[in-house]
Amino acid sequence: MTDEYHFFSWGEGEGRLKSVSMSNRGPNSTVKIELEVTNPFRLGRLIEQLTEIQRAQDRPKAGQQKKDEARK
Image 1 (cartoon, rainbow, N blue to C red):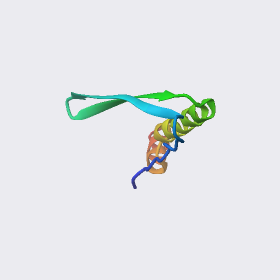
Image 2 (cartoon, rainbow, N blue to C red; image 1 turned 90 degrees about the vertical axis):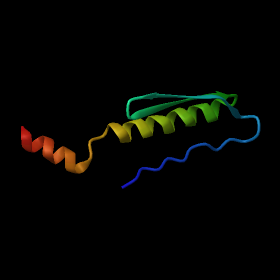
Image 3 (spheres, helix red, strand yellow; image 1 turned 180 degrees about the horizontal axis):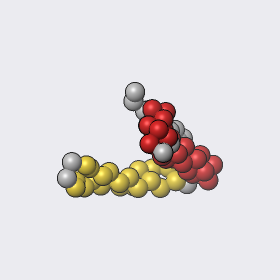
């Protein structure tokens, strides 16, 4: 199953992409995105959505949780 996140929805002048950079370390790549947001509502919503993504990634998958409980 693939996780999809869609959260950029700005009106004109509410925000902009300031910079993008990328680095490689072994098999993984890191992409850093810097955003400049002028609308406080959009900033708050962006932070909420990024927090939701982080929580979803930190949550153990259902199958993994059962395996972890079985090991105890």
